[in-house]
Length: 478
Ligand SMILES: Nc1nc2c(ncn2[C@@H]2O[C@H](COP(=O)(O)OP(=O)(O)OP(=O)(O)O)[C@@H](O)[C@H]2O)c(=O)[nH]1
Ligand SMILES: [Mg+2]
Image 1 (cartoon, protein in one colour):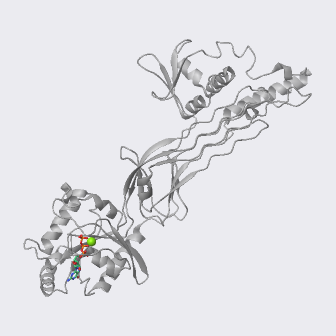
Image 2 (cartoon, rainbow, N blue to C red; image 1 turned 45 degrees about the vertical axis):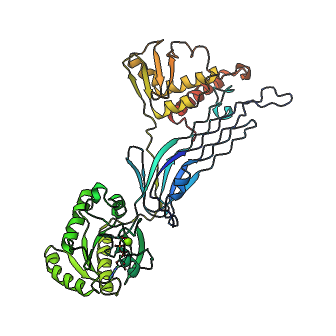
């Protein structure tokens, strides 16, 4: 028997960015050839993509840890590191992605629909890319950013137009087997069906899918029988079909009370109230069954149901039923907003690029949160003073110092950048006060300067100012 897995926990890790390289070009008789350290490659993403040839989540049940490859470090001679490869994980149509708290992150329906479950870390810039007119020879490079880690839950919600519900042995699987080419297991004992079956029905010009779920019994909502667990597979259907057994030998049952009980359980499960219902009275090939069907039909019709008398075994009433279902499905499709024809790629969250916050916490610590400052910290090699200075410059340009000052921070106060469990904490030394500006800019190598005429100097200064402005406006070259 094939195992059916419709819920798995998955731990995904994107690739990390490769470190940038700090290197200086060396050539005979050219002692100061300039910086030539290449950029690190970007880490690969982990991407979930709907693949219609995949039908279960079994693979992920067996190996729930998946990792994309990391970017390679940059090298001297302006050689960039290779990017890591994205890891594409195929999932069945109708896979729902949840976080560990059960919040829906994405609902993947339609071939090719994708979700970036973990984003690769950026590669660090090498010192060649970091050099500029005013920072001619940076003696540092940026570190690659670690790849994102994510614990997610995948849940499969079968995508079927029509869902059959009913007591065990009512003949749900038998109906699928005669309406479609599917060959589900059929037997005269309850709970023959342990996992949903899916079939494709063609009725005139309409092609639709039909699924059953394991039989329901009174108290299914309390976990009796196989419980309501499988009803999530019918959540996407546009029509529910009650399959009622007209030939059951259990004396306390009859089609109307069966229907009431199943409706009670559906209500308990919730969320299916708006789906149109059709009633099928099955097994009318049995003489008593036909009598009972005729007897209960008026009552069911009085309740507003369309009622079909059929026999899955003797092939009675099937054509009529399949066309009636096609009609409801076609109507539901027409009412739905037009299907997206392009592939949808869902990214975890839109990052607010420019934003950051400064908050003073109870113990006096100032906490800075924001996508950019936090990434910049991760990109910084704290063993390299120049790199640390560069970080300070970047934070300053973003306005972090300003905001700290406004928030009341003073030299020597503790500042943390990042979340509580993963922050870099340091004593604040405002760069302006420390006189960094007066000492000459970081990364400037005066040995590379040659005397310039005054006009040239002015032009250079203007260029420098323009560049500083541009760097502020759009620093990130990626
Ligand atoms: N006489 C007669 N027997 C039927 C008919 N439809 C199904 N059966 C029989 O009823 C029994 C149960 O049929 P299934 O199709 O397995 O029923 P099910 O609703 O899928 O049952 P579970 O999967 O256990 O929930 C089998 O022995 C079938 O042969 C019918 O139209 N007439
Ligand atoms: Mg069955």
